Image 1 (cartoon, rainbow, N blue to C red):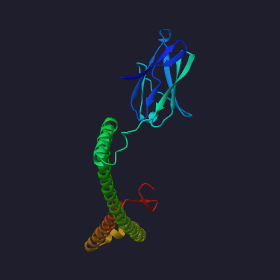
Image 2: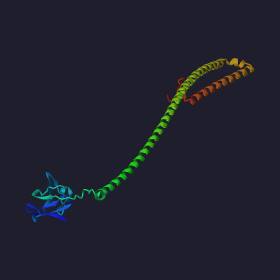
Image 3: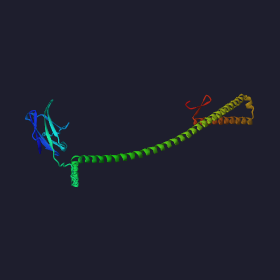
Length: 292
C-alpha cells in the first residue's frame, strides 16, 4: 500500500499527505516523476533533526521507512535529486509531521508479558529466518568443511610424525652401520698395513736369499769350469796312459759334474719360477716388480 505520494512538477515537489502518527512502521512512499525527467536517475534523502540519510530507492521509485523514523514527535524531511550524465538537478524539500499517539507495539504491555514475549520470539524467529538462516546454513556447511579439513590435517600430521620417527630410526641404523663399517675399514687397513710390511719383509728376505744362492751358484760354476779346464789341459798322453779303471773314474767324475750342474740349474729355474709367481723379475742381477 502506498502511504503517501511525493509529486514532482518540473523542479518543485509536493507531498499529498502531511502527517503520520508516532509508532508507525514500514510505510511505503512513492515518488511521482514529471514526464520530462523519465530518463533521469533518482536519488532520495531523508533528514531527522540534523542527521541526513540516503534513501534506498527501488526501481519503481518507491521507498519504505521503518519505525525508527516515527519513534518521536518530530518532523521528517525529504529531498530528491535527478542525475543524467554529468547533470545533477536537486529538487525542493517536503516535510512529514509525526503526530502524537500511544500503543507502541514494540513494547510488551505489563499485564500480558507472556503473550508479548511469545510475539517477540516469533518476530525474532521470523527476522532470523528472513535475514540470517541462509547465512547460518552456509556457515555451518563451511564449518563442516573446515572440520573435515582439520581432521585431514590431523591425520597428515600423524603420518608426518610417524614418517619422521621412521626416518630417525633409519638414520640411527645408518649411523650404526657406518660406525661398524668404519671399524671394519680400520681393521682392514691394519691388516693391509701388516700384509704390506710382511710382504716387504718376505720380498727382502727372498731377495737376500736369491742373491746368496746366485753368488753360490756363480762360485760353483767358476769352480766347475776351472775343473773342466784343468781336465781339458791334461795331456792326451796322460789320458791314453791311464788304465781302464782310471778312464772309468774320469768318466764317472764327468757324469757327477754334469749332474751337479743340472741340479744347480734346476734350482735356479725353481727360483725363477717362484719369482714369476710373486710377480717379480730379475733385471741386471736385481729383483724388481713387474712393470717397474
